[in-house]
Image 1 (tube, rainbow, N blue to C red):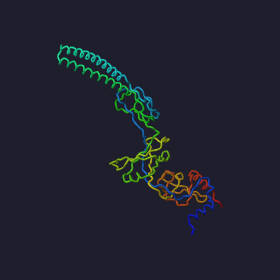
Image 2: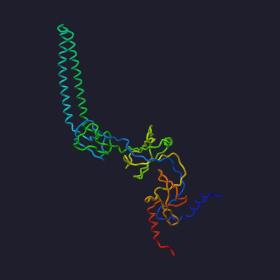
Image 3: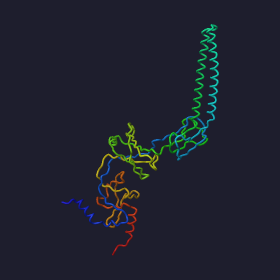
Length: 347
């Protein structure tokens, strides 16, 4: 007994369909092996992203970059007025000079007292006082030198440089503004290294960990991206009972920026589904449909679809049957349907 499916295939091969001459591409609807899994909403974030803040108080003397500018690592992005800190450094240096003079005087006095003690002209108590004064002068000199180093280090905080190469996403200060320690100055990120953050329910954790593939969909760019890795963080949110997952993306993705809405598709298996290309779908308001071709007649048929996959296909839940022929170019099919509808019927 012949298999009906093979008989149908032979019939199609031997009898070219009438729709082969249509001015748009068509394809038959058929069952295909498609991925099954779990889909959740996610958000794009940069792996390298930081906000540079002021470490000292001062007035903003220069702002060298603005939002959207590319900055190389080590470039000076903001400069603060160093007048007050320069005065502090000068004062510390004066204290060092004074401490050095006191130390020299204490050393000379200590050496004299030693000689007098050896000659039995002073008591042990007098020598002890000279020793104590000398050691106190040494400690004061060390403290003064440390103060100069600290002042110089603080003075260096007036020049703020970029910690890594990237793009400035936000500027938080204006020229002439007075800032205090902890005040944000600029925020930036590295556009070459991006990832996606998703929250998954706890009951899906085991399936996601065993998932061999993860695809990331960015609807605003109409882009599907195969993930390069996945990291499940070892903690759960008490309020939502979800676990955060980090999904690594390939480097140098054009148009992908932090904060973008995304969908994470975790593939946990495969199944035989009735699927069609997503480019054949027509969306008008709340209606989802496709153009169905019968001989040379084209009509719009409403369908109910499932979740699309990374191969550009979407499952058909209702509205189509295996063997139906659909238009792969809905715009051309719509124009053709209108033109044939306006033609007068043959007598």
